[in-house]
Image (cartoon, rainbow, N blue to C red; front, side, top):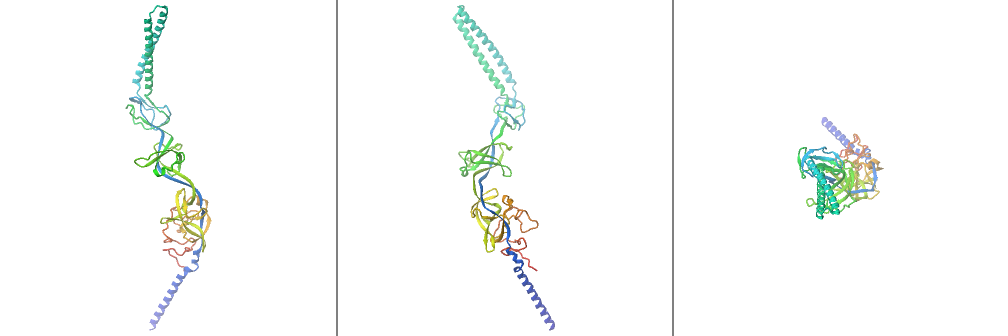
Length: 435
């Protein structure tokens, strides 16, 4: 009997101790450690101001040389010499290819001999005419003989002129056996080689001048009406998307392509950056440039399809972050165009976005210059530098926009400084009780 009473007393004492321990655990978070839940979070804020917004669209463009031709010979014959290599820079008049001119040169020499004979006959006929004229004046020659000498002189003159013209034509023809560059440029590939027989229909090479280029882009019909000749610029971009050159539009096709229903637009520029004719490039058409209110991209969060920013407001806890829905337009640089939701001068939080909730107490500070000029990603912490060993800021150095799905953050960690979240423990999180 005494043993049963001892066991009953032990079980009762154990139950009381367990109840007391449980009660202390439940009461712990309501005490001192939980008081840090209302601590204001230091954040950087920036006043919204109007900035330059560009209405642009990027397309695939083609560079076209303003002077690009295919070289054809003007005579037929065998290729005797190719003095240049493909890709060579040439000046106007430089010889690109030589066709064997020996047969033409021999024909020219024969014609030149005929020209010399005709010239001698013309001189003799003219001398005879003058002598006949003198004899006619002295009455020693009949009129018929005189007229005959005049006709012979005129015939000899005509024959000499014909031979002279034939000689000139053959000299010009002989010059065609040297194929020369009509303007300065870059020689393309030679599809022929020495010894090949070429005709006036044989393409010899390509000659391009890349100093003056055109960029041709195909734009939708709906957007073509927004382009103005001489005003709308077309920018050629490098691999990083930065403009290399800007060319004002000088041509808009009057009709769209029947196959693509796109309108060709062209801009001309002086090539000073080493671009090549025929090159495919990224081209940016700047339809409009205007001033509009802007918000940094790294200050914007999204829930489903709605965009929000955290603005500075007043609440029961003092200065708080208010989640404000905004309507955004196009992206220009590192900022969105604000179409509605906030006004100019509104203070917007630009740091520690991933730690904020609607109505959370904050301690606003002016944004640093680098925070305003370069995005650190939504939720960048303060100066945007990653903190070592700080699991509360997993996105601080990733630069990826936060995509919250609701008010809570599953598995969220406690606030920096050891305090709990201002609105209580996070869903799914665990609070270590004070021992």
